[in-house]
Image (cartoon, rainbow, N blue to C red; front, side, top):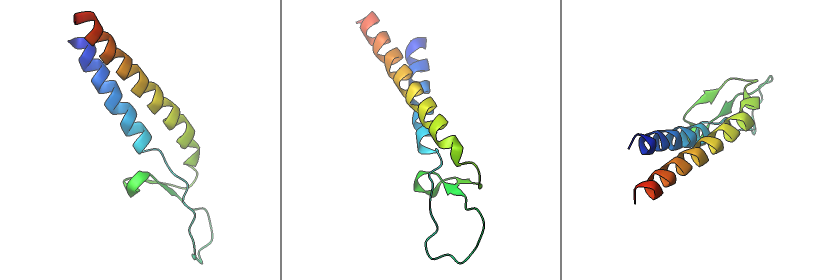
Length: 81
């Protein structure tokens, strides 16, 4: 049971890491100068300028957590069935 709970928690954390990864959004028609920030998917989080580099590490960490969580969930199901 503990293995399945850990697997579910890791899967949820991985999905959240992928959803909250900063996306580079170009400002169209803006007359302002200077660096622009990024938003996460669905504009849930505003990432300040210079934080776009976090996109790739968050995606990698998120995918690894999702895969690890699914493996733990499936491993627990096979072991007890």
